[in-house]
Image (cartoon, rainbow, N blue to C red; front, top):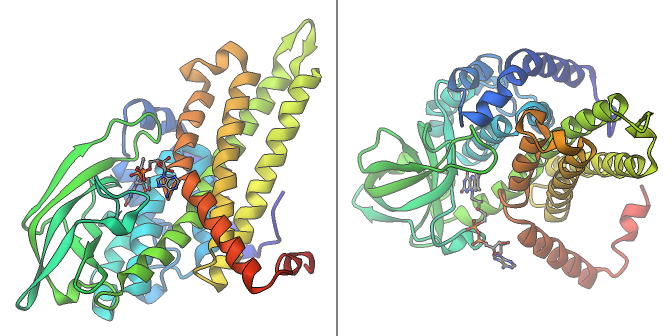
Length: 390
Ligand SMILES: Cc1cc2nc3c(=O)[nH]c(=O)nc-3n(C[C@H](O)[C@H](O)[C@H](O)COP(=O)(O)OP(=O)(O)OC[C@H]3O[C@@H](n4cnc5c(N)ncnc54)[C@H](O)[C@@H]3O)c2cc1C
């Protein structure tokens, strides 16, 4: 079921991404996982096909279709390979969108087209060894040295870092925080280890070290010292878009479970006839559908208000928990075979777990939702009625 009617452009886009995924991604999804293989050529091909820059206007190398297009691509990639979808999200949403939304004309002209085409791969670098959920406790700093800045510190758990050409790096400045464009060719940058993860394998995650990296003023993203808003609005958009990885993953798990339940017979009966299996299918479906509804609601909210935290946090909170639940139940429906690596559903469960950690944790999402609810309630005790009017 589609959460809401979509126009022809987006229908065609979804069909084309489905075709691409069927031909190019599904056949290598197991390899991506088993060999921790990042298909860099395929990633560049996604640039050639216009998928990387869907939110960017044509004059800067994109197709200007907006967040709905990005969400559709995320969802379809998430269905086939959540790890490729994660790398796509880190490149297109976390890095490219932030750069375009906040960057100067120089930045838009100089860097954005290379990220849209896939010539360059991008990362967003916020997390540090000492600051994860409490991102603003970062230690990486940019010191003013005459006409330039000198950036020192380190970042960790950064998606695409082992391959990235462009790094959007948040640093402490005086005053505030400021995002800077760093290039992998800049002096003083070292890539650290690539992490060996339980899931999302193939999406390369790594460390970065900065030792007095010299950066000019033209590489400042947004207004100097005003990076906190860039961070918070970026995180909000990231929550919404990454939600779709997990709705896609859930659909795949549901399909595999349904297929198996109609093929497998026990005691002479299709297992889909057993009420306990039917209960699982019913709950899996309900959680999948509610994930999609919340995801599209959050997407609508994002288009009108970049800081609508309730919708974004609720969408990813629910979709991530649902994906884990659905993948786990898919394994249960497949019995012993579900526990075997060839089943695919075991990968889906490992990949789904990232949903409760990346883009902020489940615990932080709950905090954000509750704080916003209380704030709204204090302003207007009837605020929940707004929703009943629709
Ligand atoms: C595969 C992967 C890809 C990633 N990609 C990127 C990337 O591209 N860029 C980037 O910058 N970062 C990235 N991250 C980092 C990710 O954003 C952080 O892991 C996440 O924000 C949590 O931070 P942490 O790991 O330091 O955990 P911590 O913040 O140390 O949290 C540990 C535990 O304490 C809980 N906790 C912390 N604070 C609170 C609180 N106030 N109230 C209640 N509970 C709390 C957490 O919920 C968690 O359960 C990635 C991580 C992974 C695993």
